[in-house]
Amino acid sequence: MEELLQKKNFTQRQIRITSRELLYEESSWGKVNEVAIPFECVTKSITNQQVVNNYWLVIGLFFVYLGILFLYGAFFDPAKDISQGESLMTSLVMFMIAGAFGGLYQYTKEEFWKLRLTNGTYLFILKNMPSEEEVDEFIETIYARRDEYLIPVLSEINPRVNYETQLENLKFLQYLQVWEEKEYTAAKEKLDEACGQKPRAIGFGNHWQA
Image 1: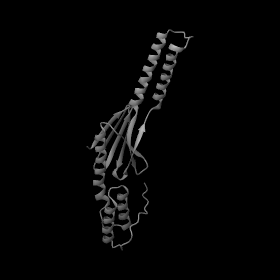
Image 2: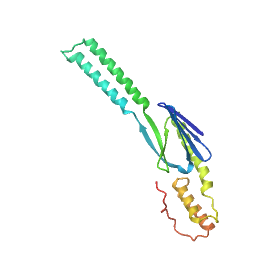
Image 3: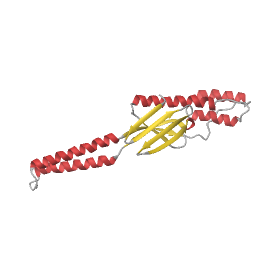
Image 4: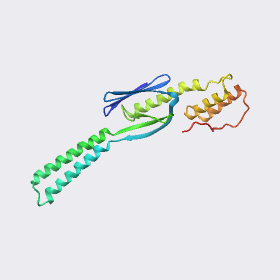
């Protein structure tokens, strides 16, 4: 699955996976925003994010309050100006309107996967559109394509290239969780041998911060 299309609340999001980056396009009310996200920016830090419109909830609760007032007036207010039947009908209408706003609140609620990028921003992906299984599969494909691209690019060892630069590349791969510590250790040993470095303790005091 190389492309994900999501439409909700008058917003369309499209994410395409290419050989070296993600192409993200968001359109809403005629405005289109496009951005290319290099695989080097994609981390494995992913969290939940819920977006709700509380205005619909507040309006719905207000109509619930009105419905209760009319219902109370139908049975307990001796000085009511309208008949019991009218009060009950008005109360029912208020509750129906409240239900409509409650439904609107539920419909506009959005559940996202919030995928952190190395530049401090995030990529938001709806969790269940078109389905949770397809979204999960798409995210796994993102990571698979990312790793396929980054490993050959950043783990290549060349004795003629600056040692520290190559070491930073290996540390960056570990920071992005492209590989585990044992893979980093093995790659560093090959780099040390190729560049004539003396064996030393492996340190992680680099500038890549989560």
